[in-house]
Length: 129
Image 1 (cartoon, rainbow, N blue to C red):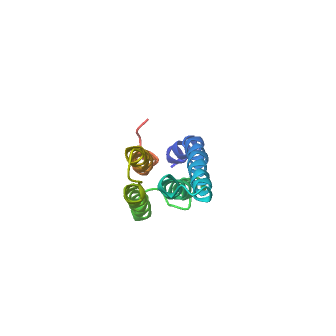
Image 2 (image 1 turned 90 degrees about the vertical axis):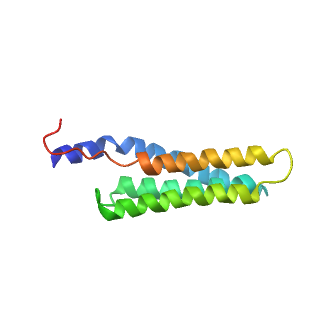
């Protein structure tokens, strides 16, 4: 049990960094909405908010280690990544900027999906060093 607690404490700084990074994405989404750039702002806002909620729930221990709650949280985070990508595709302007907006939305969605899959604490079997 002490090894599991030790492993989760080591991961805290990375999840705190994720809170900062996803928080900055959410903030840029809010600023983008205020500047009337919804094609880039909405996917950024979706990814930022979903990432912050997921990282905070991991750091604060709201989700128990392992179990169905973590799988559901991961699924919801992946769903948010898909929603961000779909929103970027729908809101992308016609013309030369369309490819750029779609690429940015895809990169943001991929970052959130990677965090959803790889952001879990590593569970080691008892006795493994």
